[in-house]
Length: 115
Length: 109
Image (cartoon, rainbow over all chains, first blue to last red; front, side, top):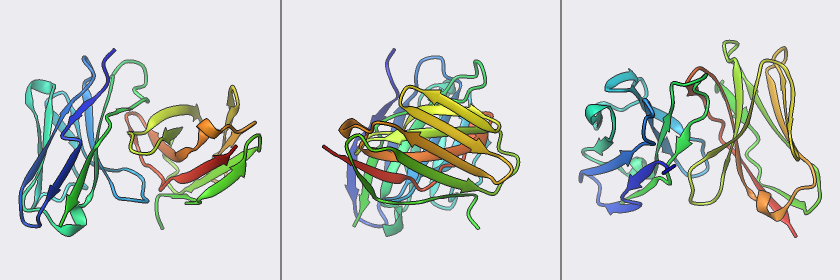
């Protein structure tokens, strides 16, 4: 079974520039998550999708961050414009609705550096 | 007060030692208690989970939950260098968890 794919793996941008991250979840997983993990901290949920719909985006800084999930499969997360404090690893995860849906499967993450 | 508090470490132990990792949480609604392991430059992976209070054992790993004191523990017996990673407690509910800050563990051969 293929895992969660993310690209790019690394990105360096100047502040005020835009950046986009892509995620392809495990086939058949209805739920998709985007997390932000700042160095030395645990992952913080930015947005949770179930199929095409948004379940939770309460911690997404909507003035600069946006996310979409096309056809309930792939997802993109965009930052526009980026700030220095956005430097972090952006993790995508997916989970199945089967069972209790406990296990989230994570991708390798995209490491963003904002200069 | 943060919803989940975890000792950040780092923790350095000799190979073969027993390791104790701990978290406290404040949300009484949490029903499931997960532990994720994260190797350097990788995404977290689920190690084990428990439901409600009690112990659960899986090989060298034992997860313990005390809901009355809102305390979560993970014990690693006979620790190995391959256990060197960051351990994240993640209490929560159906399809949603809150991660602790993680404890970085190094097992010295």
